[in-house]
Image (cartoon, rainbow, N blue to C red; front, top):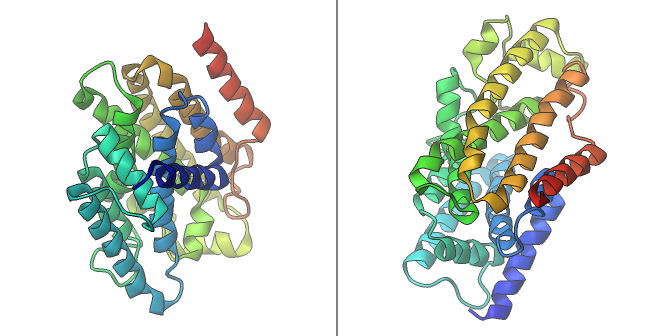
Length: 303
């Protein structure tokens, strides 16, 4: 693999991150330039897998999606065991393989991630479209979110042994993921999925039928509002447990991660500001606020 091929691979990953992860991409702008390509590679890999999983609307695609994930895992395992890649290889895999080797990221975090993604493919042995408890949901998030936080940690660097920073990194990944689930309820319902704990919804009188009714009418029932308020409080509790871990990171990267945590947490503010209208709109943080938060963290870093 030539340096030109690798540069093109990382360039593709940067484009994917810029197009699909606005908050994520903005936060990476606060990182040192030499760290950014690796972070873009991790994002692009996760996005590639997520797109495969979501491409299962037609039943005929289900087996193909599962097979594609198997091929990705086998390919990545082969690259890590033997060689990073050869001319003509998939560019995202080229970049993520180089990132794993360059930063000595534990490959297990990628296998756990892929296992959780298989849970999203209808017809696969691991498939789940509902989660009865928060414990069950967190088991899914262990791969879909916590593992990504653990992948990031060696790239960001720490001022303590890596193992000491891992619990907070995993928790921050979970906090981000739960925020996505609360924001994307309508989109997930359209795919036949609910990524919220059924028992905690039921405590407020919310079930699948009520959620679907809210989606069909575009109106958020008061019982759903109360359930969402509760889960937002839970989500903020996870952020509170995770954010002290930012101080365990290399000082230079802390503004970027604080920015990401602040902006993701602000999505919860937007859900509340719109009176929990999650069935008719996707809560987003206005661009001016995203830029203001990033500028504030950058200024603090200069002091």
